[in-house]
Length: 347
Image (cartoon, rainbow, N blue to C red; front, side, top):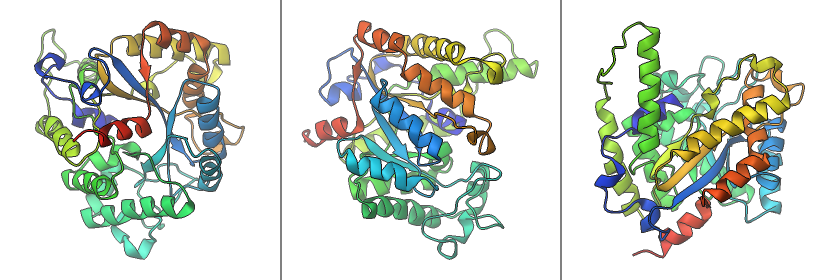
């Protein structure tokens, strides 16, 4: 979700704010408050199994469902059987795999700009932006919310698969309006975004180095749209919804050497250590940590080549070393359900 990382980076530091959103929600000053969140539930049998294991056996405590995807009935049954689960919607406007695809829940005739020549959702964010209208986007994401509610679960939050809803200002407003109308929290990092700034700078410098254009001390350009993040946070807060201070969304880009040959033990050590190192530098506030926990079957490789990366996320969540680290660092774990309950108590 580089689109999201690039979109949200803002210049002001945490110390320029009177309070973090975590403090406004009643958490202690200087506390690091995390939502350990699994994306892509419903995408496949392996995704459902990995999500449930990360929640029940590990330190993950929140997840979101891709409503257009084939294995939604299984994860929805789990949600109905576990009504306290922190289960939201991973609003989905793309279908990015070659041989395993899905279409809009509202139907192709209702949103022709959202589908490709085969009738599936577009394979890339760029194609969605180039072909879909904001009206079609809003129609589809509201249909996904209604689909979930009709199946028997009330989403605790909304977020965006591949960051598509952050790729166009009108898409973003449709996303916020949907959350406000349904009074469902939307994932908006509208606070200090210190880690996002750090990660954006790191990625931008790496890209400049690869092109042979980096010079020490060079100013990393900032897209103008990034300056809107703070105002977006205020808009969402005004709508009666909680707001994130920061976002940790980097594990999908971690690459263990010889990833496909790595043992489970090697993957777990690598991913756990990366989580520890990156969480350690988070500033105080409410941060959502995004991961993709999959327990890949032998068939998952026919869907995606990302099985080992997703397994690494799962193994880290199951690692007692990560749990011990979070406890020793006095990190508070929370959920979207809890932060919305706190927001509702604030006038």
